[in-house]
Image (cartoon, rainbow, N blue to C red):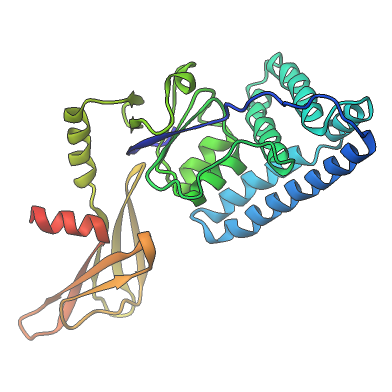
Length: 323
């Protein structure tokens, strides 16, 4: 789905227990709870969409979330849930019952695009149950963790991305699914895995996700982990940029190292050439980057070109040790 490597503890998502309260003591009160949950769910989606403008590939992210919002606002599905509450079910049981029926109908559809929307429905169910206080608990800080799940919708993936997830393994996924599209936009290593991976994974166990060979290795041997650690260390550089001075606009070639591989960009623009070598820290938190500029001078001491190398702080230390 998305090339890259990730090493870290497993976090299993989507194995939620059945509702403990099936019948409503007060149907009118349950209807009110349901209406409040729908409002909270929609507000949460609006917040995700509003925040998506600050993310990489913002246009793609927003388009996927807007398509997801259409699923979440399906009045027919919500009417079915409300009807089951009126018949005496608790709000949580009504959500699960109506969702199960929709899920089964969509599984019988041959159109692969429509079948992909099952993940969006599961995403919506999870967010609705969370609004009712019955969702699956998530760690506030998931930095370095590898998510293993049966299905994953775009809103859930974006939520996990904001918590710092390092990679994703999904049992039911395809390259055209919303989760895969969003993972590519966010440069999160992601693979499709065999059914049963979610049950085999144990919360907190070490795991290797190799999205370049399509392998998920649960509880790997230390020797295997060391091999992958070296592979990750070799990816320390984030970008390299060469600028050559010209009359008018300067030539700038930039190579960016992403999860999907190197990407080369060419531009002609006015470039601010340095006079002396420099190294500065740019950004903040885990996104801090060492930016090293090396000017190239002619025999008269004039700067005619410049080389810039960027590396995340932790990776820069590794690169310095190797040098």
